[in-house]
Amino acid sequence: MRRFSFLGRFSLGLLLLAAAVLLLALGQRAGAGGLRTALSRVLTPLQQFVAQQTLPLRQPRSSGAPAPVLTQVAELQARVSSLQGEVTRLRESENQRVLLAQLLKLARANPEYRYLAAQVIGRDVSPYLQFVLVDRGRTDGLLPDMPVLAADGLVGIVTEATASAAKVLLITDPSLVVNVRVQRLRVEGQLRGSGPGLLRLNFVPLQAQLAAGDQLVTSGIGGRFPPDLQVGTITSVLRRDYDVFQEADVQSAINFANLELVLIITNFVPQDLAPLLATPVPAAP
Amino acid sequence: MTPLLLGIGLLPLAALLQSSVLPQLPFPALRPDLMLVIVLAWNLARSRTDGLLWAFAGGLMLDTFSAGPFGALLLALFVVCLAANFIGTPLWDANPLLPLLGTVAGVALYHAIYFGVLQLWGWQLDWRSAASSVVLPAVFLDTALMLLAYPLARRIARSIAAPQVSL
Image 1 (cartoon, rainbow over the protein chains, first blue to last red):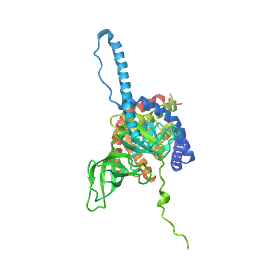
Image 2: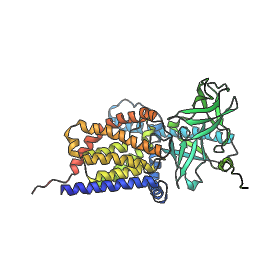
Image 3: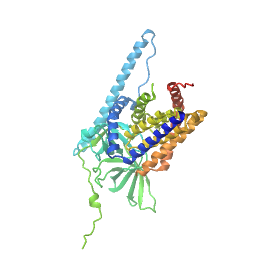
Image 4: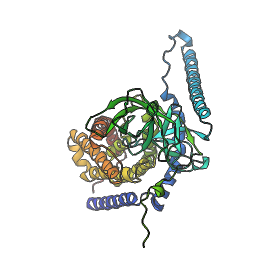
């Protein structure tokens, strides 16, 4: 009996292992993609609910309670608790108002774009990937490759959208390259994530006199991001005489760990430059 | 309560906590692999088929909340739990240090498999920075959590185990 039980468990283990490998191999194709969408349909509303309920976790709580007063202790404690709840809610509303006002200011500064506000409802469960999940999806008009902003600058790009949610790749992820311009010097370079919250500027010619404090904006080169969006500030420069290019560490003004609300530009069409960059093949004589 | 019902309640909760709540806590750098700890603790405490089903379902849920290759977290989680499950509860019970050592090895293997899959899929990652900033803290944090999770899982596993009848 015990042997049969082990054999059954062994067979099930191998079967599930094979299924896991198969799912990984299939990736986004019909079967696996459908499974992911179905799971997402079930879990995303739960995630939105949890994100709403845990919003106060992002804010410091007020502390302190009245000293116990004989017979009215329970009543007063209940009242304090209720008032504290109200204070937390009001503080949360005030924070949301400030955030929305900042986003509105940003939207007014760039009136040529259409924006959609979205709330961050989760983060990638993998510590290696810099993604956030937002509560807007295809039904709201979101599509992959749409740029995402916060009040203080560029956040990232939409990579995947389901009906009610979307995944946003942050500029701090090493797989996302942003073409930028140093505002003061008008020289261009490439910005890439180099770890959680860290950015590294590359491919800036050695002749350019980069300095700490220089502001970076998107250059628009490559057609993936609109030009002139604020990206970050240079904090230190790494210049070696034997190199062709210099590097710099860049600090984004955005606190990616506490990102709450973002704006998605919905009317920016990324340019596909691949056909223009292809090497022309000479015609046969 | 059956293991199936327990899993249905616990696993989505773990996935939601790991995705939406833990990253908001004051120390975002300290992100425990909650799902791994729970599912591994269950497989250490109870070497039955339900542990394998938990690992599979938990992995699928994690992949739903990740933008990485679908199935990568599932594979990493499942391989670790499969090994723990096949080694068997009698061995893990033999010495109180063994489950902790198993956790250290399990967390390292989980991250190694996941990191390997990401590299195979073309993600640009620096293994030295990953080892120091992600894997090492995760090993300490997950092992510390296992100090709570394993005794709890053992207690629950014993309370729902079928009584042994000898004829």
